[in-house]
Amino acid sequence: MQIRILKNGAAFLLCLLILSIAANSFAENWPHWRGPRNDGTSHKTDAPIHWSRTENIKWRLPLPGEGAATPVVWENKIFLTSAEGDALVLLCISTEGELLWKRTLGHGNRVVRGGEGNFAAPSPSTDGEHVWSFIGNGNLTCHDVEGNQLWQTNLQERYGTFNLYFVMSTTPLLDKDRLYVQLIHSNAWLVLALDKATGDEIWKHQRDSDATAECEQAYTSPILYRDAEREFLVVHGADYVTAHRLEDGGELWRCGGLNPVASYNYSLRFVASPVATEGLIVVPSAKNGPVLGINPAAQGHDITDSQWQIWKLPQGTPDVPSPLIHEGLVYLCRENGDLLCLDAKTGERLYRERTHRHRHRASPVYANGFIYLTSRDGVVNVVKAGRNFEIVATNKLGEPIAASPVIANGTLYLRSYDALYAIGE
Image (cartoon, rainbow, N blue to C red; front, side, top):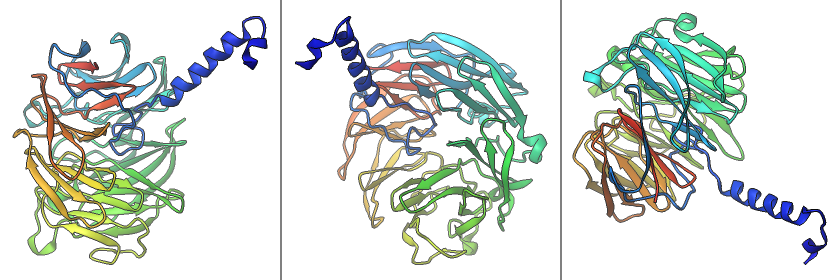
């Protein structure tokens, strides 16, 4: 009743302010390829589960070329990288499906695996004021959200020529005032912290390994572990997972056992990145190898097969899709479409079930009680989260997809090699 005594439209303005605050409190941006918490989960409760090429499509925007980079979303803007012939470009698209601007990031695109990968593999990141883009030729670029370039540097020129069997695919990790970058290839094993405002080096850590052959290389991305007591960077590649101090990059611990010496696989390059939740870091390997559950409180230089390894799944790792953790369960989507569900505390396998038998490259995401699994041929299976397996929807777009799904403010975004889709009921 007190609002009525406000004069000159103040009550009306106050109501608008309250509505605006309420709307913003429920908004959830997707600033990184694995979402707002860097773990593939969304808190939104209105994500769609049914669609087709003609059903529940808000809009479809054709793209200038192929790319596996996952889009990022901040409020009413979407950012993604793409090939455009020989060029690599950054696109800014409105959430209404309009191309707002396009900027060239570099030239000399390289295509690998019969068109499956190219230099538009790393995903951009945004803080709502700037967007950072990294492409396979080494160019790392910062733009403001209006498309003005603020700086650009080339990490190959600064830290050595990339030497990988395929293409550099790591996505820099944005956190506070820094970009954390890992460069793991046959010419270098480096972990970097860069100033996000300038691209200047804050620290550089030389990461040791005894990996050989293709195992010297990795296509993974760094993650952060943070809780009330500790925070550190997690880097995965060249046969080991390592934890690094944020202050100087120094190594806190490392864990091996992902490529056993007795049965060493010389082509075991890591592609799937780790994922973390409070009290647990889940570390995949490759080619049906092991998955580790590690205690983040680990101490000691080498924690392989120690008390800090909470559990180990001997086989069944995803080869490319990164793991997902939600409400005490770990989900592993294998490249053939099999979905494994583990108890996060014990590593006990609760089920292994078949979804769509086709190559899976995208990482799974969670929203509103469901897990979204995306295959290379454009089929997305929606599986009910929980200890019992149930497919609730199978959706087909008929276009190749390698990027992971994005869920922001009630809309599901799927980036195919042909177009960007906005999906919502």
